[in-house]
Length: 284
Ligand code: HEM
Image (cartoon, rainbow, N blue to C red; front, side):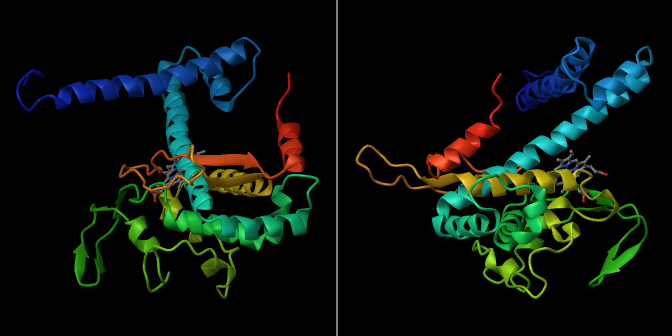
């Protein structure tokens, strides 16, 4: 049916999406290859692409590898960081507790580094609770059953699509009492403590198709959380009359879940924190 036919307007959306995907597939890839050729920096994708010049099938595969890594990594990692920033703005008391821990363990002269992680259980608990309450993909990617199975009286035939409901697992009140409450202490005070295996973080999926980038994501998000807590103060914004602007704390209902825009105030804790932040900024 032509796209002008009543009910067929979705074809415009499909063709716009196809154009968007083509751009995601091409623009960063071309930039990476160009950077390498011009001596402006290297990357694995660009190096593989140069090695495979003249082999269009191989080149397409390398391009797809770059695209899928970008798509899988960018939205998800940003979703977790954005959820952390919003949640901390709503919980200044929890911010203060974690900050006191960082001050005590690390001091005020440097930013947190990975070697500090095991010494910061409060920070770890905040990270775990963010990943529980705000999984970037509330519904997991589809898996396929490799053999016939029975579960609670249901027959799951071989070849059946199975989609794990990460949202529901993370809000099981038998495992996480008061599941809609942000309570990092549930990890802090649990018998195992907060430093359990990364496979316990359901947000990264399950089994042989578990997130391939989870260690990178885990490191990126943890370091961001620790660095923000060490240096920044997250508060409600104030209106012209000096009253705090309310934060609705709403999220999108999309496949990748993100906080909806809100107003807040983000400032360095003090001058010492400001100097630490500036010292990490690249000055050319
Ligand atoms: C907060 C950050 C992230 C979250 C919550 C997340 C979550 C997920 C989930 C739920 C899946 C599907 C797992 C399953 O099928 O059970 C997945 C797959 C995948 N993720 Fe991530 N991800 C994150 C960051 C990243 C990063 C940083 C990268 C790459 C650098 C990445 C690369 C991938 C890839 C390649 C797959 C497909 C694996 C496969 O199908 O075998 N992800 N991710």
